[in-house]
Image (cartoon, rainbow, N blue to C red; front, side):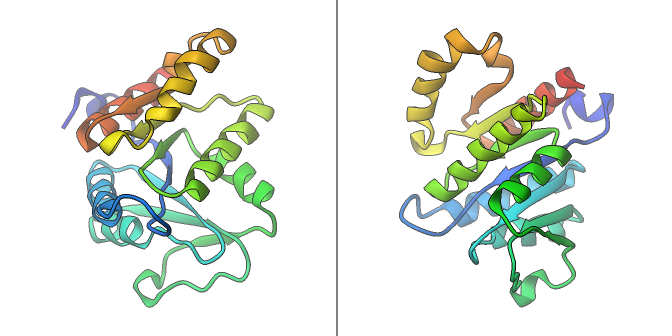
Length: 189
């Protein structure tokens, strides 16, 4: 348990993850570990499900650990049997889904995944910024998955977004991911 666990209620976090497409073979394992770790610490988890891509390992692990999960999805949503009973909200457009997640989330977590999950993260972050919300983002940089974005943040965000290091950070482990996101959310509250 970290000091953040005792100081404030657990955050509502949008987790962007996908196990579809090319990439790291251990993505499903990472999702399961994050789902378990975050749920055991009381985090409320929001996931986007689009075009049949649902982060099943993340959601099933979180629920098995007693976690609270909400899926924000496109239509028609067909959940696998393992996700029966998971609450979901359906929105017709990606912009509506992203706006809903931006409205609910106090922090964004990016796990190594596909280009689709990174695109959803960026568009959700931009939607929140357009609505006047700057929500912190922490990316799990396992096997240098977000090294390019780390360079972009330092070279492009730094001059244009004052205090960007309080908005965008990179973690090397799941414990580090939790500690960073809870600290940033606590600071933002």
